Image (cartoon, rainbow, N blue to C red; front, side, top):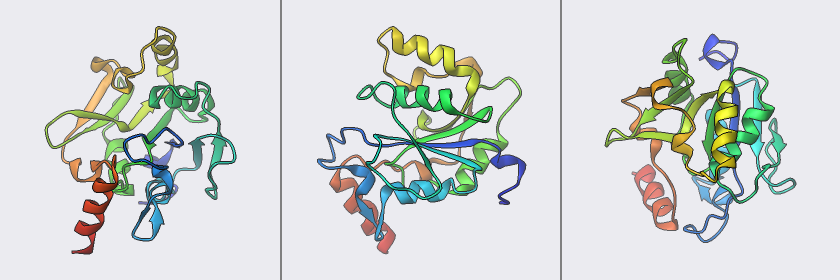
Amino acid sequence: MSRTGEDWKFTAVITAGGRSSRFGSDKALALLDGQPLLRHVADSLQACPTRLLIAPPGRYTLAGWEVIPDTRPGEGPLAGLEAALNHAQTPWLAFTGVDLPGLTPGFWGALARARTPAARAVLALDGAGRPQPLAGLYHRDLLPHVTALLDSGERRLRLAAPFEQCVHLAGLSSALRNVNTPADLTALAAERAL
């Protein structure tokens, strides 16, 4: 897919630097095929003209990515989305975390092509048919809604886009393999070695 193609006119956003409590150490720096998980995810979004990393300042170095501090540290990916929506320079954002190393440019291109004029989010469905909000496209118009959720104490990313404004796309579940624990990483590395 071309770097200048219509599909790539969105801001890439990776949220990193969370507690990684189930992993036991910083997931972003965990290695898969000799590269940190953060690098795998970043590579899937390299065609985006603007790239933001929502993370503690000075914690990660990622060439070509602007580090934006989380405005509500410790409050999860919904807070990361709010920070990203505040800094986005395009109407659409490709938003994800560091624990989905199977994401590819093709995954993001499929989401981009599924956008409709009324949509404010595009999410892939996992193998069980559930929308996966941590690898999706979000429209900047969602900022007031996301801020209101956070101000009310809500932290669930899946509520970021009202269902009626969301396009759900099947057939992409292979990219959604989540690495939450060292065992998940070991299993994924073993599968890739076959």
